[in-house]
Length: 142
Image 1 (tube, rainbow, N blue to C red):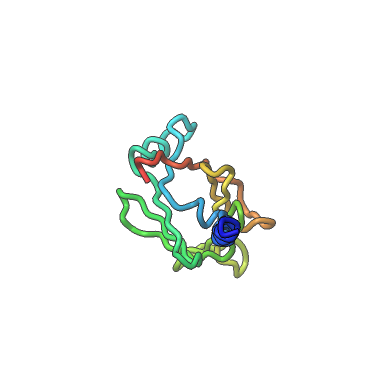
Image 2 (image 1 turned 90 degrees about the horizontal axis):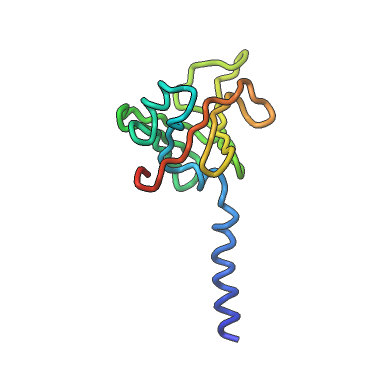
């Protein structure tokens, strides 16, 4: 009986964390371009071994922060929406427009758990094609 009670408590504790396994928990880490990418310049300059993008998410899931070692300027954004495979962001101080009276927003779209692309707009209203994909760097980089 006691074992069943303990198992039930463990399950109740794990269920909320499993439900939160979405882009907010998958996106943090180090990301670089594929060294075999046709975009050789980006792959060489912004690869995992050279200058990856480091992504972090605030504990409350409302803020995104990205930076690269070579460029210590942080890019911060409000997370407007999130789902299993996406984060919708508006960068702090964004002045670029994607339409009349519409400040640009960006979607980080997880194509796979270890690959994402940027797309201007939000799911259901994308305004651009996807960027070159970024890939999760090996554990030793993140």
